Length: 217
Image (cartoon, rainbow, N blue to C red; front, side):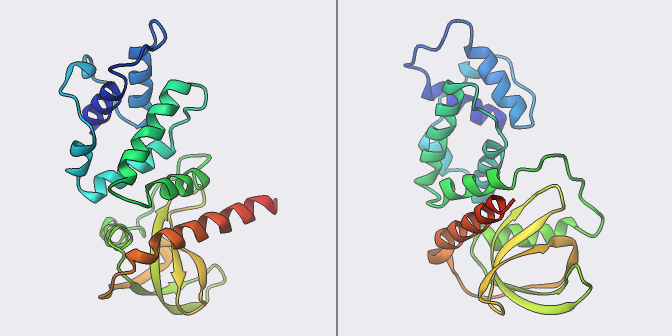
């Protein structure tokens, strides 16, 4: 995956004139920010661009978006432009890519969160797929007050704030956006249906709700 991203960036810059001596450091910085070790000579690999992105599974495209959201490129305008171009290209495959990037930037944790045993990999895998492929789900949920309810929701995205892994969703019971701690979700069931036509609007609603929450503090 790292070689893909590095080759993508290298291909994007092949006709550019980057600042002297900064090319390799940018690639190394991008690799480190994406949570991987930089590979020497990555730019010498085969050039990768939109066709290569289109060949990736949706899950890997989502992973790239998550990693780019965690990349603090504000101090490097060239790297920032590379990221923006990559998101624009991913957006030709996943129209909601730019909104997902903004959403994950809003929920970027201030510290690392360690998954608990209650947040089993199987349940998270089902939720990730339900978000990616816009499948409704239902489950039993225990809230922070200990109250138990049954919910049917349209899963929007899994986010990782410092308080714990959460599912952002549109709750059909409440007819509103809601956040659910994954460790308190039980009896998860996936239902037939496809709300992909609504997903971009639901993501935008989740962004606005988060922004309103931040503005209130």
